[in-house]
Image 1 (tube, rainbow, N blue to C red):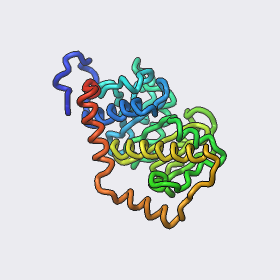
Image 2: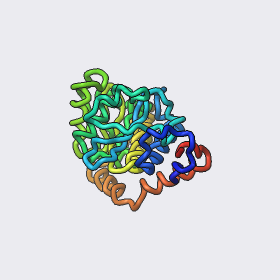
Image 3: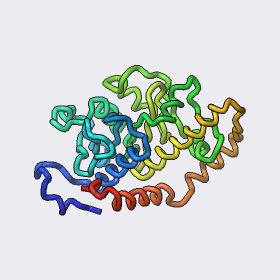
Image 4: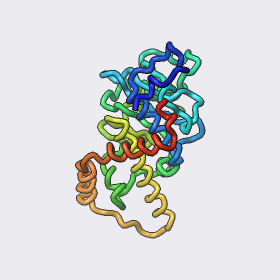
Length: 255
């Protein structure tokens, strides 16, 4: 998987440590683009590489998700605003939001922020709760934090405010904004991103019929959520399959 030895064109001053995390995060970017969960050159993913979470990898501003490579990812520090002075600096809102999250939520090793279509549609509704109407939505039963206090782009105080809302939940649905997923690994975060967007797609589609929804009881929803949590190796196997496809179709992602 480590293609570092094959690269003769890289700047020798680049910090290219944490190669596995770089490769996996590059895969997450490419698949977000393939699945239409990106937005222009906006949105941002990060993964913590230090024990306290303050050092993390993040995408540079202006690079399309479909073109991100492992070597493109920037190693930055949540306490060092000079990261924004470098020529390949991250987006200002990306640095502010992810720095605050990695400082205040060290358990959130991987953080994925998107404006994916159906999750963002849900974030626009006055009631942004996702009811347990099918297996995928039940996976997130009682596992979604909803931000109802949008106060502009994620800079300064807004970034700090948002960073404290997540708690022990894997999903933060950002009202009037989009979606944020946090997990202990890149594989888990991407799996949650994928399935939450699928659940939102089903819900928004069901709402569009105007017909009554078939909502399960809390007991069944809670039981199904636990079954998802107990399912053996699902996220890792899902992500391994995605890596294999990119190894064949887009091998430059891990350069």
